[in-house]
Length: 327
Ligand code: DGY
Image (cartoon, rainbow, N blue to C red; front, side, top):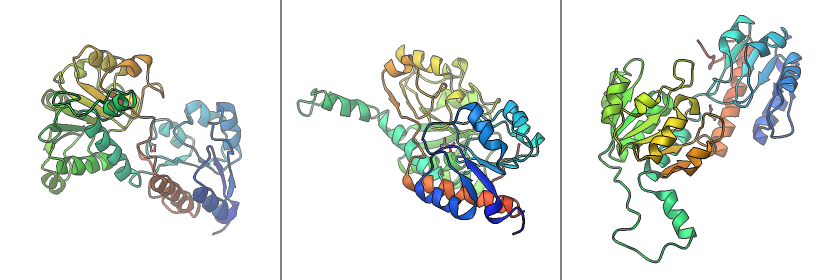
């Protein structure tokens, strides 16, 4: 495979990865690992990337225009471990001759399971029930205690029916929810038929009609605060918001106040605007807050690594990597 193939390719990894992934990287490449599980500082990140052909970052690494400016010309590929690439300035990367790849698909089913878990857990007060029991508040069954809302028959509005959104729709349909979605354009009519899904060109109109909203679009400048206060106010007061995509898509402050004021029924979230949930959100009633774990299965994380390695291998062998991020 010549000068760019085999173990002559230097790959700098920015976080501790699952052991089998690190082992495979070690077999195939001249791989440099980050032993600790803490993210690298911006300066250390630049230093690492400067003398590597490939950088394997995660969502904790901020690769902005200044990074690509500072990093020099050896770096040719950023092979992200993860699907979301909102921490990478892809335009700046490309302008510096750097290709960016990600790892979609492999995590979609596991991520959808977690979204479905939230769709069930929030209306059915699952976490609240567990907490009440642990606090000694359960004295036996009661006809009127811990009543939630029925999930079956409700309308689910999916914002962004891509790989994850579609996997959620399949699950939700089996639970008796009707599927509504908003996308830039309608999906393949066969899949739409199969899911019995209703396309809404207007996000505003969809929001006014659904009972549960699931956020599944990527975070880009165009989707920042897509669920703004104005849009959240279009929802019915008995509606719930579920977000396993990126926190920045929802105005978290507005969401927390509206839940607290009873103008929204609750939320199930895995992602937050500032990495961790705000104080206000932590104190809000009827919320289930997860620590960004929708793709956190042993299987998904290994497959993400395998996918990342395929991208690195294809690219360094001079082929088109399968998951190139196209702007
Ligand atoms: C992703 O892939 O972008 C998730 O947020 C982490 O797996």
